[in-house]
Image (cartoon, rainbow, N blue to C red; front, side, top):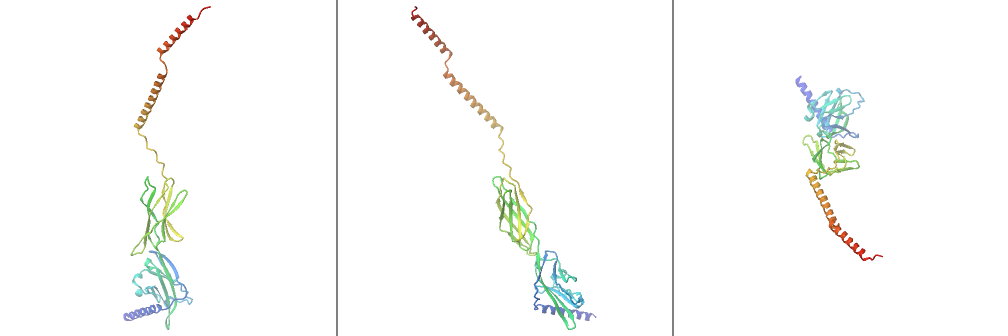
Amino acid sequence: MGTCDSTMGLRNTLIVMALLLSVSTVPFSGAASLKSHAFFNETGELPCYFPNTQNLSLDELVIFWQDQNKLVLYELFKGQEKPNNVHPKYIGRTSFDQDSWTLRLHNVQIKDTGSYQCFIHHRRSQGLVSIHQMSSDLIVLANFSQPEISLIANQTEKSNIINLTCSSTQGYPEPQRMYVHLNTTNSTSTYDAVMKKSQNNITELYNVSISVSFPIPPETNVTIFCALQLEPTKIILSQPYNIDAKSPVPSPPVPDHIFWIAALLVTVVVCGTVFLTLKKRKKKQPGPSNECEIIKVEEKESEQTEKRTPRT
């Protein structure tokens, strides 16, 4: 019995290998490939959409999927899974949904992006006959992290220039653009920069960042956003980074000794002014002795006049 089972297993394997060689040269039907999207490290679906109008059982069919390099992902031979022909990188990563005729590929990686084909053959008396085949394209995506803003150096009191970086990590495919958007009460501005990117050699995921410098108005509140544009209509925004308006710079307090010096100077000036004024007045006004002498002279002149006038 052991020899018989081995012979049967070898025969089945040879049959499947012959099918693989034959389908590699058979063109697909005129239907366009279906596009299926999957996210990194999650599950992708590879549909086959077999109508099964004859209501055939799995025991009568040979079903398998292969990738664009003709590597087998999954094989179902007469209702039994056959891992012998499955490529090592797909072993343990697939599951077959019999209700929807769909193969699920688990733990999807960026490298899994590509075209896949499913084939269904009917086992008849004359041999295996191809009754259905279908192609689908798997597109693997990875969500970038929300962009983060980091200050390189804050603006100083003498300068209103701000320097910052914006970064986002672990995404795929490569984004189209990264920029900074600045909002004030009365205006909006956009600042672009060369996007720096690096790609992991194993996961093929991208990390991206930009560094920008721009002036900010000190007299108003400012809100800054970092934007990562993945597609023309798909943009991821950072959390807002807010900068409050600068308060007016108060005058430095005057030291106490300045007040004393100022008061002393005022006193000196006032006293000097009063002294000069009084001095000028003293020069212009005659003294008391002069006044007396003038009065005496006037009295003598009057007496002499009376003596000279004759009496009648």
